[in-house]
Length: 417
Ligand SMILES: *Cc1c(COP(=O)(O)O)cnc(C)c1O
Ligand SMILES: [Zn+2]
Image (tube, rainbow, N blue to C red):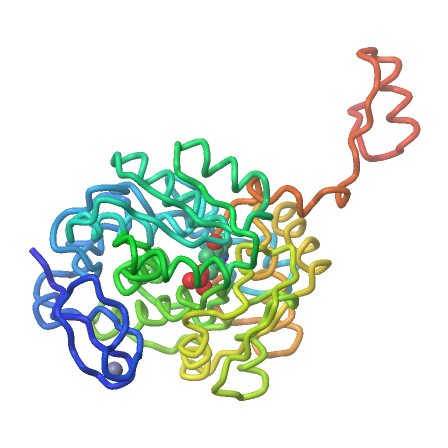
């Protein structure tokens, strides 16, 4: 049972059949999925949603498939953690972490978009899936394609973190390293998609893929007890997730699932790759491409596909955007781990560091609800912490050596007398 009405051009509004299309043939605007909201309203109530299993498919009417998903049926419904320790450290009253560092199966929010994209690709009859990736998408496409036995090709900048490369190869994916930036990888993939007829999840079937990100927003609303937070901070690479979190909030509000829509969304990027942040700060409609130079490789897209729309979303919600230096990213990764026991990847460091700035700037008031979006797992970007953590002391297996260690470092090791 499908609730997809059509694909629609975000610029001129022209509608297209729900096929493997992604740009408007009249104005070259990007296409977006639109639904039969009146029909959805009749079936999708809070009770119906809560009666379903703990995955993002509990919102299935608002996701762009004609049938049941054929891969990733357990994706999503990750924890929304009340972060009291971090709130104290930041001087906030009500803080939550939406933790997609533990998303199934590949430990990033990309599992949401990929389970939608691959399921949709199969519905449309594609036999091969592929992607251009900054790392997490590679992991997720490879894992989910393996799970449903689909041939897959993954294109990455050759100098990605080793863990992200290993975490793609292990699934038996066809991985191709490209000597170039993500933006060059992406350009090549557009040509390959046209020539080989493969389903590139984030290129030629992007309208469907991107919708998967909405579930991140739906879950925040439900897990907050069917209300929206006042402030949400979201990391931006291509800029899609932030637009879809906002779309999710608007859809839930329009369907009467949350009482009011009074949220501000904030975008976070690394200083070494901040084209969207720059546009927001300078009030520009144009996104000026940059050449990325940051440890936050998962966010290193210099020419973001949804840059224009993400800046527009931020403005529409009265939010703001900020960037964080590599030094600030590392400190924030440590702060999150030490206060909440959550090990986020570099993108999470970016998001927390930016949240801290927005609080200090007074843009996020200390007494209002805040959600920080943690989108990937720190075990995948350990290089970023190389040499930044204290080495553990090494001693012989003798109590006397340990006693000596305790004496030499003072109070670090608690002794019960
Ligand atoms: C891809 C990615 C993002 C941002 O996604 P966009 O939708 O391209 O903005 C954020 N965090 C992590 C960890 C990612 O891998
Ligand atoms: Zn158009």
